[in-house]
Image (tube, rainbow, N blue to C red; front, side, top):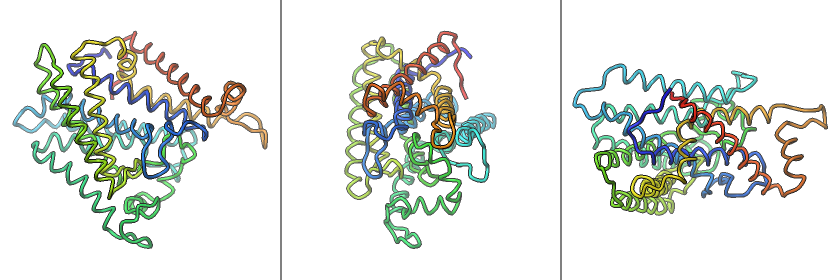
Length: 381
């Protein structure tokens, strides 16, 4: 498929930065001794690794401001075909997520239901319905309700055996709801592949929808104020930065009562990461759209144009390396550990080796993305 888009290049660059971060974190996370910033925070708190997934959801929402623009500009309701296209894309993403989770044995009795692509699927689907069906004030209302309602639920609804306001791994209200709806085995089977972080729960997908909607508001603001300008100005970049600082500050303030936690996807985490996303988007916009400094951004744009395809392929390769066993009994070793021990640990430390392995993996997938880019092959769902 040839690439054609009226949206800003800075959005594709931002997405490329997010997917590059995801590739680094996924690969480095296979080694327990990797640098702390390449591993997710154990529970409360955050690391650089905890920023990459919300970055992706934020830019997903920002891109929706352009892809759905002609349907939201009209006073009439979008046609049935639009909703079917949204549903189809969501089902494909969810199906790809199940494909990755089950690979390669596909034991449906313990297949993990939720995951990264499943969360992308659900947040995209719900956010698209909100955007297509509701006016702007109602969209903001839904966003606020998701954030405040999630905080109230986790803070004040008692969980049998734990009480109210318990934010431990098993005692929080979100984990309780997930156990009721999905069941423990279907949530946590596949935890041996912990490079993707702890499983993305179903209930904590609610505030993640707010991440997508806030990205949409930013993208729509940028589309309306920048798309028609022949010369884009730093004023838009400055405004995005101010909004980002406000959101970041609100997230830090809220964290005094509701800690920043990626695995719970707390409301404070949403505002905190959206704030950083806005600041990073402002930097991309300023450098690429305003100052026309594009040379540095091209590698990220190449990744961003085939982000889902590269992510799916990279996870499949990681799973193949982890599942491929060499030898038998006590001498058995998987392909990843063999490569890591013989090619990296033989001459460097585990943390530096994990980082270098992750960087080389990123370079490999960039070459794949570049090959697709040269052929003008862009896989869109």
